[in-house]
Image (cartoon, rainbow, N blue to C red; front, top):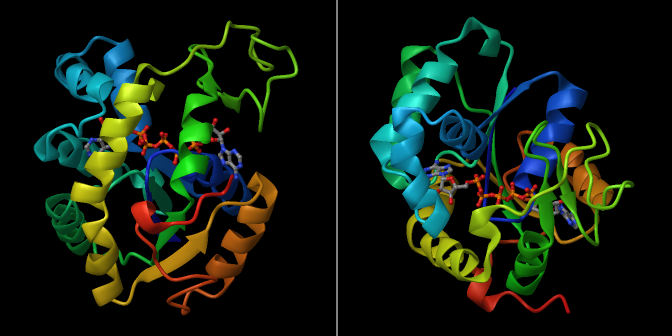
Length: 234
Ligand code: AP5
């Protein structure tokens, strides 16, 4: 199973990718996670990426394409993968197609997660993560049982620097300008399924498994609506 999870920041791509990864035994490749790891390890790539990430801007295409190319070269990914947050620009999508062609691998489906903008802001501003094991929580929707400490490793939870209001605004703008065009790009290739991702984590997962069970379907539940025109969930 080879999947791409597409969608605005905070729609729940990472949360669902983790569940699918465990349930279906495929590996999650999150460019956001890879970049944050490089930042934590203070590698040259991490130092270059940090300023873009803190501001909510995209890291240059060549950097992320190189990261994904290296990951996909690993034989461990032969059984399948979920690309979470990649591609995010048309040049990245074209580079991915080239890499997969070289490896004679076919992309099964691109899932376009859709959530109203007000809900996205709520999800991002309430997100907390563990700096040690990288577990993700939400202060309201998925709180840690130990309050401000990680359930798994007791580390104090932190808020991502790009989950501050100004960076959230930039990320949503960057999404509309640079990533949303991928919806038409993949729709034209008949590879896209839209997924209404506004419900609870479990209900979104139920819908997602239905899409995955019917990989021939090109749409589910709803058609794409730009963030700016989606109704408020409040
Ligand atoms: P990245 O880490 O990929 O961030 P993102 O796409 O902005 O996605 P998020 O992780 O913010 O959201 P998500 O959709 O995964 O939601 P999540 O499941 O966490 O990228 C960070 C930065 O790295 C980018 O800004 C850029 O600088 C750089 N970068 C990464 N990839 C790049 C690329 N390809 N090219 C260039 N630059 C790149 O959920 C969010 C919160 O909501 C959590 O608290 C969660 O608990 C909660 N939640 C999830 N689902 C639900 C639900 N159904 N109901 C209620 N709450 C929910």
